[in-house]
Image 1 (cartoon, helix red, strand yellow):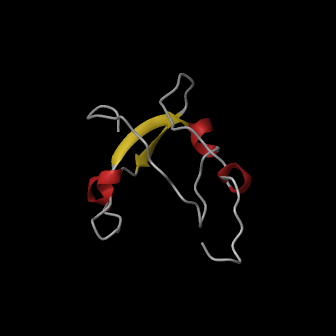
Image 2 (cartoon, rainbow, N blue to C red):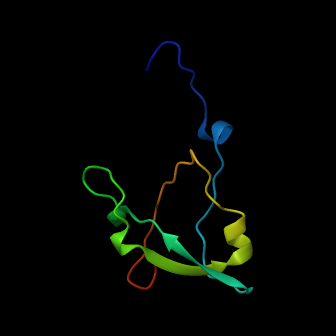
Length: 82
């Protein structure tokens, strides 16, 4: 690590949000899900096979991405659970 860098806990510099699920309260909105399989070996995003999930619109509004956001995906999904 460079000498002029600071060490901080992730919780001091970012927010954490759990994944989205359909939920019980309409209205719903269909959103694209970026998965590990959507990245090429070169690290580029391949959007030719994006999965979609219907989630509560209210949940989605609270999790919109903004420029500069970093997304980490952790999933135990399957064909019916992207």
